[in-house]
Amino acid sequence: MNHTFPVLSRRGLLAGAAAASAVTVAGATAAHAAPPAAGAPPTGPAQPLVVRDRIAIATLPGGPARFQVDFHERLTAWLAFWSANSPRAWSAPVEVDGQVSADGGAFTLHAIRVSRDDEVRDAFAAGRADAAHLATLASLHHHFPLVRVGASGALRVTDGPAGFTGSAEQVAFAVAACRELWGWRAADATTWRAYVGGTDAASRSGWAAFTRASLRRGLRTE
Image 1 (spheres, rainbow, N blue to C red):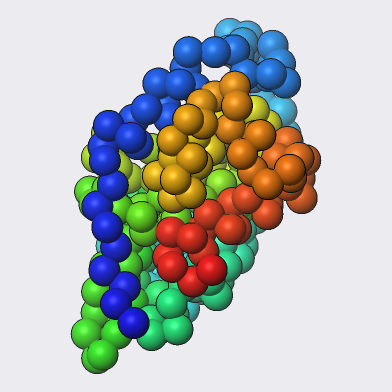
Image 2 (image 1 turned 180 degrees about the vertical axis):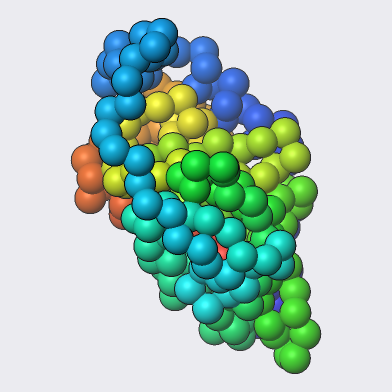
């Protein structure tokens, strides 16, 4: 099977972000929008850091890095999920290229490399605006509450439990996925839920189902 992914329109990808920023997302709270008070104490004790040279079985090309324990476990679960929904012709990821934040609680993803036909290939590349990029974004939204797309296309995730929060980043992804992966070109920030097969995307199970289906759609494994 040919797993060369079509290049998506950057205009289409950016349209999701523009649509999301044009409305006030229902369900967003003042706590999401308001910055923390100056000098406010941290909300909890600092997480212990562990040194790891890989995520799951995929090596980190930059060498060992320091992660918060819970965050590394979530990244491991995420990569296993991504791999389980990838084409059978691909190996499990052999490299995950990215950088960990100084506090060990955020990760910026640049590439996922797999082996196919005895050759290591970029299954996801930050600078490549294709269906695999949106699919990988879907997989991260499935596992993390906050995922941001950088100007270079790199994906930055922050630790925390998964679920739909109504953030601008989640809505931007949902609109882009509806338009670019599912072909629902009329979807926007106020109507995208109506296109998601009657599933209540605001629920934990609904968001999980939508992001998983979008991952499989983008990697052509549905």
